[in-house]
Image (cartoon, rainbow, N blue to C red; front, side, top):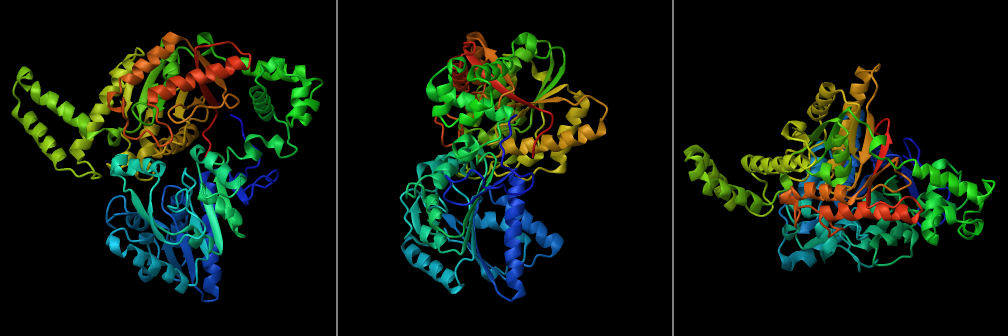
Length: 636
């Protein structure tokens, strides 16, 4: 797997080559490193102020990105005695209407993730109210602004960024003059929140938010972003001109703003994606490949038809000069790519494999071709479904299955206890309100629906129920999309499977932009289990780790270590297996906001797109291609 330069192992990067960036940007090797750094900055400010008996006024966000910071601050409070008694907080926003005790409330989020675990005085906590009368909103917002002024203004505000570029809930169109107010939420923002509300139709259409002007008045601003899905909007906010179409771009006008990014969120910055444009670079093999592929696609030429002038016209003088001639350079890159194409005879056979699938359909969506080929090569394949996927099943699917049980009862024999449970489940579902958590019984039925679909999917590939393991990991079993942290029991479940199977190969989801975070959490559980497994068996050959993608994005060609060609028949089998997941067909519960295609369409079109790109580069023409990255260990 290629690694971009500029990331420190445990801290922020240098800013070399960042002249296109109009806001200071620090890059971190992992979200955990970033969270620790930001938390330490906040802690240092709190301690410095406390030494002179002064308060600290913080602006705080919600969402998945700042949770790591809150966890670090809680740890500092518990283990190092960090005192929050001099801290005053103002949260950025809240949905409207929203009761403070509701599952999706930001009041509840902040208490569960932060305030219940530190000693911020109750009277110092301020969060926008989502339950005030509509005719009092303007008055309430004005009072919120006055409280911020009375506190002395915000000393430091921590921000996330939405994929519309919003900060707080300041959607496109919000200007620098705006203050705390009621706002209508953008469609993309509502779709991004759909997973928390069990469907976008349940997401409130309005919110109360601090304004852009309020945010810009803060003495210091830190914006954090993680994940590939944030990379495009980060580039726009950081490198393009200030515009109200991307409200985060207004941070360019602040004298003390900082953007903190993990590797994935930084992926579209010019100094990361095409660093040769920003200055001199060290031409590693990985960077050379990326540059030559970029040049070929930019010029519309096959790699072996590029000439010297192409390099000199596109900022690649130093690369061309590093080789005796451009023909040798192009041949070198072409051959490296060609050798990554893996036919059946190039893939493992008669070995033990575990395919870890975060949800009960990621296996066939993301690596249906590899699964099919691995089975046909005689490998001993176990498909381990890490979560039950129950939150992604519509109530209508449960009612359909219950109706079948009721209608077929006479054929199977009238079992009064079964029918009583069916009727109880139907009654429970009829009384359920939108956004309510399912009962444990309904969650279980939804899990069985996903399990049966998963078995039907792998049967297309020649496997059967005995090849499926339903790990049902505890972190997922909250009945909501917001999950518990990975715990010891989660790690043990994975470790026990590794011990039982002693695999030669494992397949792990590497598309960590999954909007509900399950892929990332499963990745962490496997990472810790593998660490323990390898420590216990130091003399054993450690399993080869294959990272797959597909549900949310595909590996770039220059990242891929293995390119698996698929015929039309291969791709048709993959799609047939995806179709077996009927509860996710036509309309998935959580498809993500930025891609209207069904998952089978994404898989098909991404695989075909990769094949077309390879063909355009001058490599063999295939119907479709899956891409994989092979690593020795999982990175943090």
